Image 1 (tube, rainbow, N blue to C red):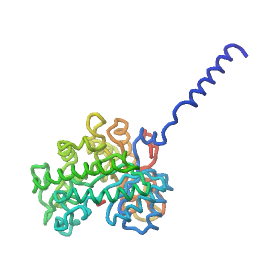
Image 2 (cartoon, one colour; image 1 turned 90 degrees about the horizontal axis):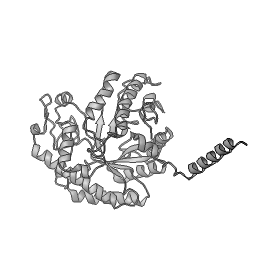
Image 3 (cartoon, rainbow, N blue to C red; image 1 turned 90 degrees about the vertical axis):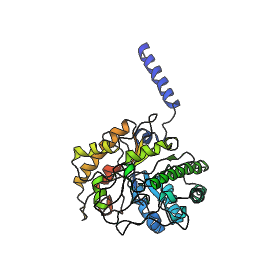
Image 4 (cartoon, helix red, strand yellow; image 1 turned 180 degrees about the horizontal axis):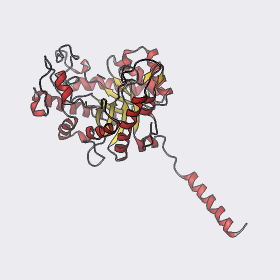
Length: 379
């Protein structure tokens, strides 16, 4: 062997030794680089244990690694679903439904929806002591079962009257709805509700830190609705822009409590070029660490009204890929950390589990590699 060949052999051995000693890449490194990509399947508490098991096994067998589940009444049944998901290796984003009447004094009454939408509690009526007591009991039970929660999202669409009783549902639709907080019918109650919401986030952080398995869970603010003014006017339901509500919450110190801002994205039927633009417009308030907080899209969806089998999902698949490209760009900028598609199997036009299989749009929504740098992992 020549001196040059001996030198190359020695270098190869040295590099192999260094490679062997290098720390292994964490199992979650791909997710950390590319964000959490998952699916929604809320309200499993309404199903039997056998059906919970079936649904979650279908999700896991489809290669999906992250799920958004809900903590809702009956709480015991919700926790059963969490145990199944954890056992199957699914990482859980836990949405805490703040409409749970256990969090409110018994004498409070929900705001009327006049039969067009459900009656809902007012956030300004929420009792933080009751919330703490019930959340602590639930988290202790979850922790005692060895379940690890990946992230927690207290509340849902608190900028929209469908989920926040401090915003008004008009008895008759058709009036102009608010464009800014100064136009909200009961601004004082709405702002008291935001104060109460900050309290629930603080309590949630404290109770999570008291657990053994979920003390490092990320905390995400309530996913905000992207319902536009035209739809709000048509339905006669107050709403505010997500960016406006995030600004109000930031003024109340939410950045010190949360790891990300929750947001929902339902772009409707648009051309594929317009879909990515819609994403960046709706998420314009999302910021990278050090400037604010990145966003978590805890719900997003594209409709397919074709309900026959076999499913023709070609048009929706193209739209889903266009939205994913928009998400990918924001993830690369550090402004978006997660995207959970809505819904697995309960919404007829949005669901991706159709005809007994995960359809093409569902694969595109949850896949690990879209070619744009993305990796896979309601009330």
